[in-house]
Image 1 (tube, protein in one colour):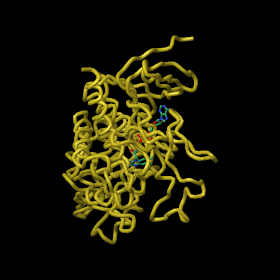
Image 2: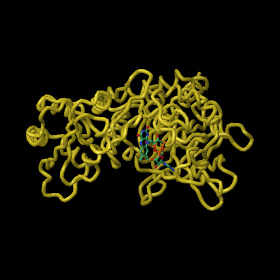
Image 3: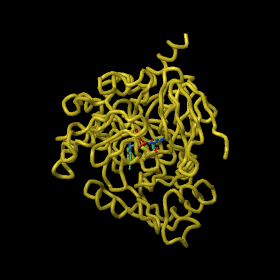
Image 4: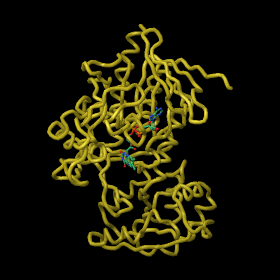
Length: 433
Ligand SMILES: Cc1cc2nc3c(=O)[nH]c(=O)nc-3n(C[C@H](O)[C@H](O)[C@H](O)COP(=O)(O)OP(=O)(O)OC[C@H]3O[C@@H](n4cnc5c(N)ncnc54)[C@H](O)[C@@H]3O)c2cc1C
């Protein structure tokens, strides 16, 4: 049997989804040594859009100004995590992260204080705070509604231009549809966007696609295509295609598994390369304990090779997500948190988990279940004080928020990781001096 690896570090982050990776980047930027343990979370399912807040109120629906939406939180979500963070810190968290992504080759854009509307593969407009730059013309096209060519690929089921056209045609003067074979894949009965994006990394495939699209362009101003423009150099590929075709191009986010989500995951990994934070991908924390002299002691492993690594850290940040990610576990008796067995705030009875109808505008009580924390995101015990002075939590595991309903997935993860990391750093400086 191989020897167990032993790691001593300042901070261990459990979970490598949006919250865990944002925390890892913030830790690296502040010079902390750290380890982030876990798989890639919901990245590959996410659209690559970074939402802050998309709901004015449950009654009135989607909003343009996320800050106005946030101002109404106390009325609708009285114990929401955003209420523990200054507005200026939420903005600083977004700025630090999107600047880092942009410097690592994945440009993000957006207007200073408002949401932008992005055309989805359903033909709907989704409000989001920050979007990949390959979708910048998507925002402009949706606002200007100039003549548009939507591109379909034979064999691609994730995107139907006809469907988008049907939904948008009453509000848009001219939307034409063009259909092409994807280069070098015409023999395949079904196409998948990640495979197409990989192929788009070569100039040979880009040139063949340009040749196929050119005859379809008439007098359109915009060309909309499903998000397939490469994994690593998407903006370069878009610029190259725009130059060759002489038309403004934009990507439309598709359903999972999504190429912009894969780009986001890979860029986060790039941001951590050669920093003070290392990754233990595809491992899970199997045992966790805390003692006053050793701090946090964690055993991690994979299903085929349990307990491969022992991590000792002064500080721990739990970013293990909700039910799908197994950060929270539900059974007949209720909801539990499996790593530290922390108390989970939840409806008193299972029959109160869900409202009467699936689309209940008030949402479902179970979606607000999670960990209750102090102002610095340290989970509270049954006595209402932090369970450990150096144990923190961030992201969708937190109680009092319903990220799906309020269109705030990335925002909650990024902002809570930022605030927790600020406190971790100040604690670290205090105890080291
Ligand atoms: C289909 C879909 C679409 C989305 N679209 C958007 C969007 O358009 N805009 C937006 O802003 N957000 C979107 N999101 C939300 C966003 O991607 C994140 O899900 C959200 O920010 C929550 O992130 P998280 O890190 O808290 O949890 P997760 O992403 O769930 O990550 C938790 C991680 O912890 C790991 N973990 C759990 N237990 C352990 C353990 N014991 N040891 C090690 N690791 C562990 C899990 O394996 C997982 O990798 C979408 C999510 C989904 C599912």
